[in-house]
Each structure stands twice: as structure tokens, then as C-alpha cells.
Amino acid sequence: MADAAGGTRQHQVSFPVSYALAGVSAVASRIAPQPIRVVRATMQKDWVLLERDGRPFKGYIDCLKWIRRNHGIAELWRVPHMVRSSLSYFNVQGLHFAFKGTIEHIGLFRGGARSDTVCLRLASNMAVGALAAGTYNALTLPWQQVNDLLVQDANRSFRTRNRQYSSLFDACKQTWTKQGLSGFYQGTGPYNVCSLLYRAFYFGLYDTAIASFSDDSGFLVRFGVAYATTMTADLASFPAWTVYRRTHQYTHSKESPPHTSALGCAKHILRDEGIQAFYFRAAGFGVRSLAGAGTLACFDTLKRLYTSSTHTQDT
Image 1: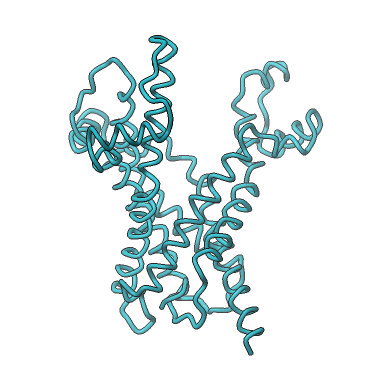
Image 2: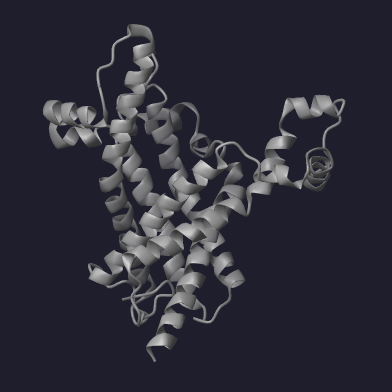
């Protein structure tokens, strides 16, 4: 089985351990760059400019000093829903990394051994990443679909005073009775394409690129590789995410969409707005990619420490 560096791993890490290591790495990577997000958001808030008599900040450092002086350094991490979002990120990344490790261990793909060509290693690693995303989506999307039904039902009940679903079990039962298994995945096709595309590049590029470095490479080297590959994965999948967002912006709207499919939406964007519209609001990649890159680098480092410690105990 190939490790993150593309070589053969002597010690397989179990599913629960991979889940825990990836989850811890994800939370740490989520919290560490939080001050950057807070500073960026503060610089764009109108009430802050009013409080400063309309004087804009000279830069990130100036804004950081203003936050520390007026609100304290703890304000950089005092963000609404940060705990909930961190726990959610723990679960998402933990399951993806755990599924990826299990798929590599089963041996459905060769995993990109060092003796293979670069193209073969890349294709194999990308296939493993896409399959891990597919497994995650297959297990979690039904629950997200049912949760959306319950949320929509609750919103309707404010107007109609009548609930269609009495519980989570009742929503599952009615969905199964009316539509069968396909009802739990209705409308998730575009999301699956986006998710599989992103995870294929996210895992595949990193696993292939890190093989060019020594197994003893430090955290900073791994983070640099992870950051470059995560940025590339974001750029490669962002057009698909743009189409996905456009197709779903009419889900709860009374307006009829100008397109009937994801392909029609893509053609509509390209014809009317140009190719640059696919990357609208993509300028924030630099900050958004920090969490994903940190998770890759932290997980790789923690996993090596764990396997080396268990190997020492065995011997």
C-alpha cells in the first residue's frame, strides 16, 4: 500500500485512528488561520469605519493592532459558530481521510508505487481520492437530504401551521415510500461531481507530489507541497462549484431558472458572462486553502509519528 509519499507503508493505520488523526489535524488547521479571516472581515465592515471616523486601515497589521487595542487579542478567535463549524470540519475531513486509507489498504488501486510512472501514480492516487469522496457522499448525503426536508417543512409550518413530517424517521419513511432509494439522492448529482473532482485533485496531487521529497521531510516542506496542491485543487474544481451554486440558487425561489440542467447552466454562464465568471470570488483561495493544506500536512506528520511510535513499541 502506498503512503502519502507514494512509497510502501509497513504499518497500516486503522480506520478509527485515521479518523481521529485527520479530525485533530482539521480542527487545528481550521483554528490556526482564523485571525486572518477575522482581520479580513473586520476591514470590510462598515461599522468599523464609522467607529474610526471613516479612516480606512492601512493594512492587515494596522487592523490587527486596532482589534487588539479595542477588543483584545481573544477577539480573533471569538467567532460565532466557530466551535460548531470546527466539529463539522473534524467529521468531514476525518471520514474522507479514513475512507481513503481503507481504500488504499483494500488494494482496489495500486496506490501509485514509486516504480510506476508519474502519470500512473497520479491517476491511481486521484482515483483513490475520488472513490473516498464518493464513499463519503453515499453515506452522508441521504442524511443531509432528509435534514433539508425537515428544515423546509419547518419553514412551511410557520405559514400553514401544518407539519408534513413528524420526525426524522417519518421523513425517511415517506421518502422511501414515495421515491425509493433514489429519493435520498435526488438533485445531488452536481454536488457529487464537484466533490469528486475536488477530492481527486486534493489527494491525488499531494500524494504524487510529495513522493518527490524525502520521507524525512519536515512539516514546513509538507505544508508547502500541500498548499500548492490544495490551491490547484480549488482552481480545478471551482468552475464546477460555480455551476452548482447557480443551479441551486433557484431551489427556494419563485423565479423560474433560465436553465434546466447543469450543462445548460455552464453554457449560459460562458455565453453571457465569459469564462472569468466561473472564477467569480475565487480571489480568496489564498486563505481558504490554508485549512485544507494544513490538514494534509498535519495528518501526514501525525501519522508518521504514530506509526513510528507503534513500530518502536512492537520492536
